Length: 123
Image (tube, rainbow, N blue to C red; front, side):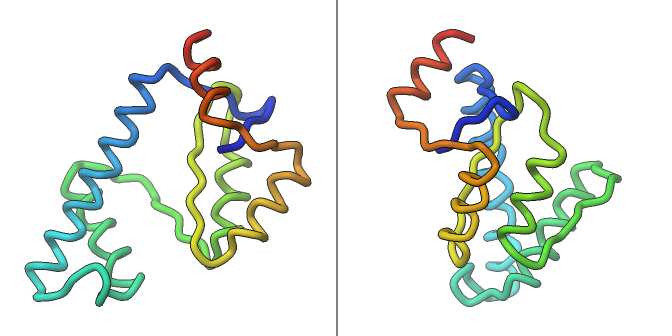
């Protein structure tokens, strides 16, 4: 986890809600893949992206859902759109070193679980 003046923390309940929403969305993607006779391990990113966008439309979302070519581009866009008090969880697979190097270069620093608990208690 990373902390910066740009991105702070929200109360634990809101963070738990964000995690729940992500799990529910991913479960819908997995269900869509299962309906096609495929698993997440077999699916391409394009298939998963298509199912995510279909789910968003069925849920009533009409806005643009941007897609980025790399994990680093995604994190850069996320930081550009962030405001003080926003929370961003960073999970990388391919570009972990590059993403964390970029975050460190831009003033983010590692945060321990204990520090997260301390910050959440203050909000």
